[in-house]
View 1 (cartoon, rainbow, N blue to C red):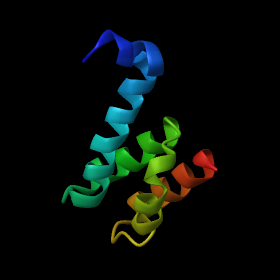
View 2 (cartoon, rainbow, N blue to C red):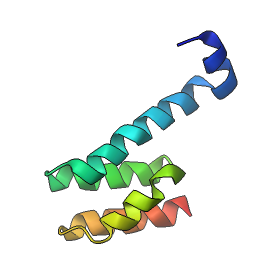
View 3 (cartoon, one colour):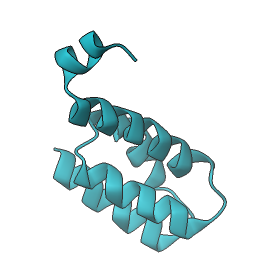
Length: 78
């Protein structure tokens, strides 16, 4: 990646955006409920606004711990 990209967005912001994309994938696609729960939790911690739709969908997850983590993440993001 070019230095201009780092200057315009900052390395930390770029890293958070990339992390959010990967976590959104985990939240929607992983069979392991622990991975889905951790993804939801972390999305809330980093304040990933782009994950709101996926977190809302996770409120219907079959695992109650994933649902709880998604709800808490939405509260943190809002």
